[in-house]
Image (cartoon, rainbow, N blue to C red):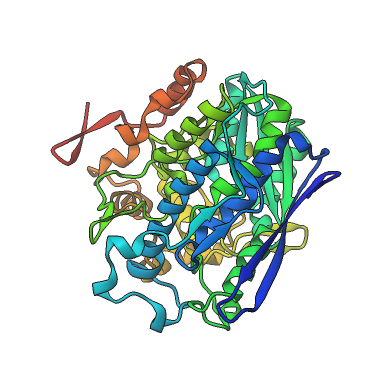
Length: 456
């Protein structure tokens, strides 16, 4: 349903015992919602449902979709299901799940990782271009208050681009993470925009109704999600109407370097370690969809060749005014009018490690002195989800800083040249400027030779 500035879709679960449960998923915009974007709204409402393709026979859509839309949904369903099977049920698990329903080692096979669900639309229609007239000089940034989004914004702003920081305001605690940066942008950047959504409540609704999830899951703490992965496609389609309204031709995602040498299969099952929507393959797939539906739209990241360590280095050394508004924490909370990070979750530990490794004081981002003091001890006890080389290199720099040594894993400080972080994806009008800025803070360019990164 499209009314005034809001879009609502009812999602109904049919249980095996005949019961049914319903949830009204909602998106609210700052400007009127348009019927001309109905097909995009429908994709935005369908994307989160794809996280549950392992647990149902059918995903029935009460509306028609185009050929390209259905192909995209089917591809996402396949990828989401495999990633969730591997990274939530097999390779890594949380304490939220009932062990009796988890796969045994013998059941971790390709066949079981594929989606059980079939997508059944009301009708399949021929493709047609969506109403749009996008401009290549305009850049919209999926903004979250994290270091990647703030750095992407700051670099493009310095280069003179028409930059639009665009936020998704989730109805729950996640918004606290983004609120500090949003307030800064709202006060200083006229192009700032946001949508409100109750998507986080929908995810909880689904957990309440999944037999694989423990009934008391809401009382179990954790800094990762029990089931869902690949949440950026939901945000992307929720924001796309703003891109089209404003004629924004570049959709910038803040994705940094991921080492391609990792074992990207598990028992023969291809997966993305739960970060498909941060992988260049996601950009390639979306570019294919744009070519059919929104010609001229481009999706890319300015940061794929560099590690999180270097992202933090550039942000804190070149753009200090923006850096102090970074909040990267699973449990941000209010301290008076300020929003401060918890200092203990894996996100906080990773950020503080990067700051220390770059010679920066974590207190600049609201971390308490006692959290900074306890950082090294907490790192010993905690397994961070960082590339092993990045973790080793950052720890060496953070806690042996000032010594005249040959840093280990030096490629972490450089620009990586590889197909998974192809700078050719950066539009030509921005590429040279972006790479010039990055080059000031990196230690050179690196390529893979016989499985090892070598400087060129």
